[in-house]
Length: 352
Ligand code: DON
Image (cartoon, rainbow, N blue to C red; front, side):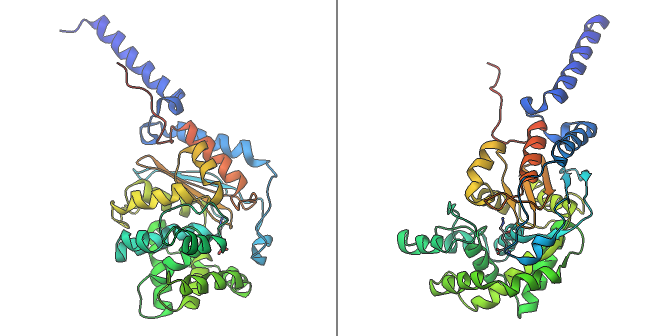
């Protein structure tokens, strides 16, 4: 039988280890689900306060109506695989999902036609260029002679949208909208003002769609694909929606709040792979260096990031940096993830 004093000292050891783990979670790589809710909430609150006053960056204005969005909107949400939702700041205000939509349309194509459809037709490589680069299409076709793009830049995303199945334009769009809604766990809708504003100024994406068609990346009807792509970018979301969408990816394709299976577990790592290589465009390497997290940004001001098996996180704050990524969102997510041990590459050596 164990001596009571030994028992007490072991218990004491265990308790202090747990305390230590909370304090140094970032260093010890304790998964967020194993952390005290209070610790997770404190990490969100700290990042919210730290960056509340930050005034760097500017709203996107190449889509005219985005320039008018309130630059002060700032909301943080985090969802763990056990369905707990943590928030800080404004998680009610909605912005257009913009490029974050590309992840979920690629997911839909993978579900409908298998992941090879994306891999063999569009590719899974970073272009290293801006999200709406036309040169990247030329490079992919002329220099590399193959699908050397990815579904998270405009050319690849418009091609992915062209692959979604449906009997009519509206049928295809509604099926995309309903799929995104399953990820978010509530019925999402389109911001018609954003859709109109981008449709009226969408000549560059139309050119991209047409060039992708000319090079056989798009099989048919490139203008319809560009139009549906533009509408999917105009879907309205708040930080909680985006975090639930990211949380579904962190949880192997099952929405952790609604418990609905949205994506096959096998497709999740492939999607996370393109998010890691291309989610923040030509700044994806810098982002991965700082966080180790697959992420995706949108010019509406949102960023999502996924710590697999651990948490999905989203921050909305419209002012962007030069690459088109929200300034506050990048900083807040990096801080929170590092505080929660979110970097999947950060491991401690095994005790020999
Ligand atoms: O196609 C566009 O230009 C926009 N609808 C989306 C671009 C975007 O969000 C890039 N994000 N960082």
